[in-house]
Length: 453
Figure 1: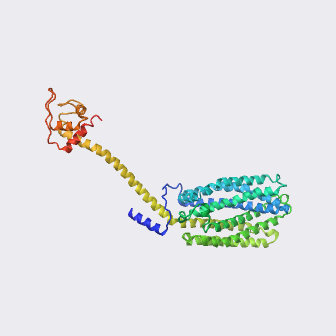
Figure 2: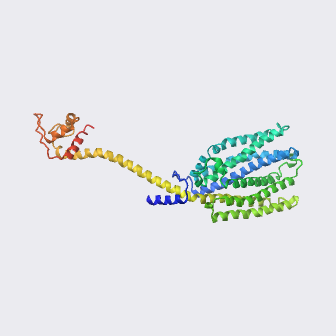
Figure 3: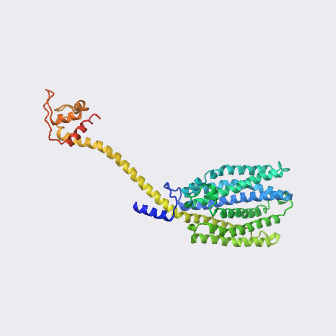
């Protein structure tokens, strides 16, 4: 115990952070498997969040541009038709990573949620309102045909909410990695000002635009997509160029923001494993970006020649970046997790000692009551059992008669035992027992008085 205390104090001196106790509950699956589930499920969820948010931004941009150019209003309508589908998939795929992170990082996730308070709780109503607004926008295209300002305002409000919701998640996920900040953070907006939040947020926004650009390239290049009927005024080549251009520009912006994200991360989570993962992801993204650039320079027929190679390379990049996040989280939290483990072990030892002491105390109290009677029974067997039975007459009367006579006057019983008289003519005179020590006499009378119990 002393060793644990000294180590705990030493660690707390180096890392002055709140160290809560944890509930030592067994994990439902091996930790490595839960981590894999967390990374894969989160990335799948994130792709559709990117599509939902990127689609919303592009729809808003296209509809505003469509005020002067009708063909962009039609483009906005087509993009809008994908938003509600992608957001539904995003919600369904969000269950697994949310449960996984709760199981793996319970103390950290709930601590961050508690510190951001009402804003975190507001995620549910905000998501509900945003989704209802996207449905309202989608199904009122004709209703507001002559009142575009209202129609655009509906989508604008949904866009603002959808931009804010990821900000809440990013702030919380960022805060859970830095327990040393828990003591000084005063609510959501204070947590939002931590150095890494804004760079990560803008990195996420450009990722949403890059993914959406590639998605629109594929979605509107399908052979069964009635392009000419749905988007008169555009050619497939026009949309393909726009999709590739958006994906390329957004990817370049991500490349520029990436170093800022790394520089604003506290060094405690850095490691060679993280650097290796990140640079491997970047190495996969560079040829993908080069292929997009070559596609933009290619002829109309060859623009999509390397499209699936681009998607595969970008997907690998996403996997490496998602793995990098998990590695940084593990590196950053490892010292604090050791502290929590020590604190929990210390608490468990203290709890076991307290329970054992409580049991011993109860046992001692019971034994104190019983020991006098048990010792008294031995004295009774030594001096009295030859003439007295507990409830039957032998040479002398039963013990129950003694209890009836002396139950309210123990001292009188003791005097009688030491120097008895003759009360009954039909019974033999009881001999005296002045030789019985006082402590044994106390035990004997204690036992006699328990006969009726």
